[in-house]
Length: 149
Image (tube, rainbow, N blue to C red; front, side, top):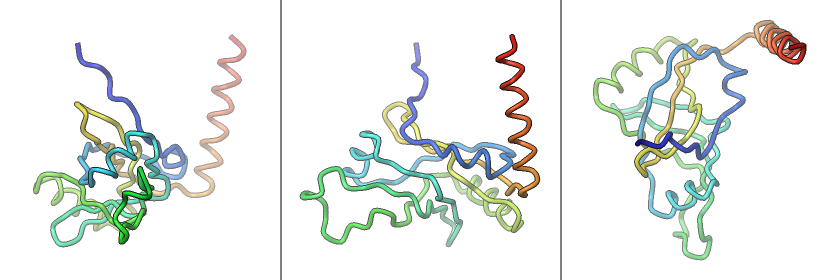
């Protein structure tokens, strides 16, 4: 029996700020000490996004502090760009989607799958302020209906 993937980090704000159109699974290239830190729960993806440059996809502004600061390389930057592991076809498709300036690729969550760290990327369009208000009203009405039962 396969266990459900365990979530390491979640970008809860993304679902409020963006209207998610579809989700893509991507691997992420990390150093060993970054993997240990991420598995310990120190991976922060809030405020990060994905760029496609030079035929590769990159996660920008994700924050992974060192697992053991004393044993970390001196030139280590906690928020450097990290390469995403996607196939050529997926990168080409993502690049085509991101050419539309209104579309964004946002990491929604990081999780473990077969002991590998994976990212769930959301292809999204930014919500306007009025759309955000509408979403809050809808959420409040759902909560009221649930509590009334």
